[in-house]
Length: 425
Ligand SMILES: Cc1cc2nc3c(=O)[nH]c(=O)nc-3n(C[C@H](O)[C@H](O)[C@H](O)COP(=O)(O)OP(=O)(O)OC[C@H]3O[C@@H](n4cnc5c(N)ncnc54)[C@H](O)[C@@H]3O)c2cc1C
Image (cartoon, rainbow, N blue to C red; front, side):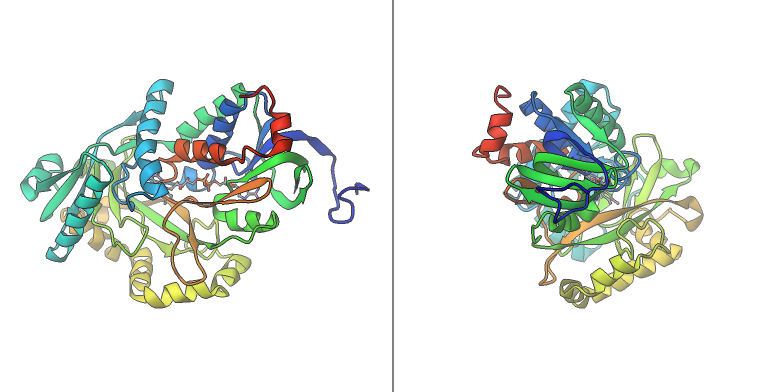
């Protein structure tokens, strides 16, 4: 135990590591992009990324659909709309510059029933409002792009693309290291103390002192914010997304990216077909409440995580409002026939024998006490800290922009930081 300054509050089991200017909690794509942007902005600064797992991109970043989104869906003027549109371009440029395999293949979003046609029309208008070069196409034009797709009408979005975000993260990591930044794996932040000079982070791998901390902890970002004395405006609720994969001999059914019109009441895009950058074709993800924050299997259960969700009034308000959709998602999760039925709305030829289960991902979705899902990206500022409290899809696409925005928001009047960063302009 260290006597003096922190002794009464914390028991330090190991020595304090060197003093850092910036410590980032979480080695997913948002944390890594932030580390890279900080290193670029402040080349003299001492920067570390702390990741609790033995590898980077172990959670949302390593379990997603790999789509470089265009930004069509989001409310004009929101951070999501702005950062995704810019992020689409910057991600493609980044991949080009660093030789990362990617493809701007475009996508189609289609209405398969009469009642979806007005939603498709609204989405088209939204795309125009967001400054995208989208076009309306009829069923025949859709067939020219995706011959096996059955629909009434569609929208073509030419700027959507595909990439493996784990490869993007590898490059971010190389750049962080080449700028002098450090990556600490197997390092879980367990306690945080705010001091006059910044933050002291106690981990299972020693204690880190930093002038400024940035919480990019994804599925645990609300908990890490609380450790740092911040009362987050929303709780993270985990929604698992399960995927099937088309058998190789059936990949011909999908050329690129096929999406249904999403339910505007939800932040999820509906079960869709995605050609991955490795050539495989995935179908999914659905969206079911996960009984464990990092639970990738249906049987995964964590009593603490589950109890936290069911004790939260916001969850019951959401459940009451969307009980029907929730039940449909659960049925689709347990019944392959129900999943195939959803896919057949898009491609009638798909049969149960054509698909096999593949990976799942868990989305970190912030939910407010009043039962409303936080739609936009949400960053909360502390005295010497910043907390990314909601970075769901398409935060991988937008990661370069989110990282830059975090760096720009670090208060210029942080005098202790300024002193440390002199000469880093
Ligand atoms: C099923 C699914 C499909 C998606 N599809 C797409 C898509 O096609 N395109 C797109 O742009 N986006 C997509 N997304 C969204 C995208 O993957 C996420 O928005 C993005 O990865 C979030 O990155 P992150 O760094 O915030 O979180 P994460 O990748 O979850 O990283 C957070 C990290 O923090 C670490 N951590 C947590 N607590 C601590 C602690 N106490 N100490 C140290 N480390 C800690 C975790 O181990 C983790 O590695 C999808 C997401 C899912 C789940």
